[in-house]
Image (tube, rainbow, N blue to C red; front, top):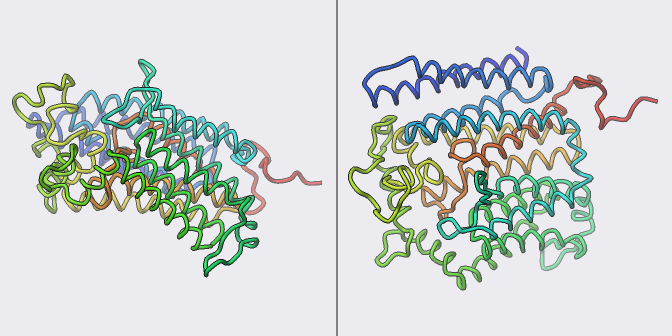
Length: 454
């Protein structure tokens, strides 16, 4: 069976899951099943089929499982968000359509993704500016996460992560030999040449600045973790990773000792049930209680207590789910807690398994990639995707300090969907080139990276 036929076959159960999920919510709400569940499932299947046909025409050799796995996450997100609020689910579905359009545009205009290497410093500058831009706008729960332009609001860190990964992959692909061969041994540790050590210091400094200026601990962990992963893949030197971890730990300790919001996050993480706990401890308390209430198999879609009866938070003028929910931000930061509460431990582990499978396919694409830049780009994109899922799931389950990043493809949010669609498109571009049979030309002409025959 061809790769595209396997992809098509894998999309069918995804559409069935959407249909079944919506039907379960309808049953709970009105004790009847309407044809709306079939309509919603049909719409979702049609969108997935459109993406499949596009890939069949443009990238016939691309990985056959990445699209179905990401579609499965999007399907879970749509069903859970619909269970929370109808209008939010409609908005998320609309953004999903926009994300698919951006996905197709990325594949069309970045068919030769190696062109990104030539503009790496411009891309890095854009990424850093995107990271710092939210500081110009009002904070959200104490953190500067979004750019608010009236009718349009987006989290710039979602796009910045792609810019940073492209820059690091390009730079390390060029300097990997210098970092590996020209290094010196000091006290048993491998130290790179100072002139090539600059990017490590810059990325470390940006990670620390993010903690200070935009108060985004989650993105800081995500960016620096992806950088260390790329540095290790490029050089094979574990000592570089050790040096980076020591630098990050030292910087985080200093900032945590002197910046109140970082110190509060650490205190809440260590013991959220302590007396006189800092503001915000109630978030992780509610999350842990909600997940425990789900048990092994969950309460069922729509069956758990999520919307509180009666007046709640009278100072909050926003409608549910911003106010009146037993969980804070159940459609964004704490959507994994909703999944665990309604689908149980097994359902939550299933979601984690999907992320693990995407990571496995992404790293397999990196192993198969034909050149250094492609390998590092695929590795970086996969690492930052997996780290983002780990950061938010780890925060909600109290494995690490709670942060405010979105759960990829599942959480409500347009910027997250669009950015991850671009990430998926880049991975598929790399996998198509890596899996292409020898001497086979791409659809649409000669591969621009390969030299023309004499």
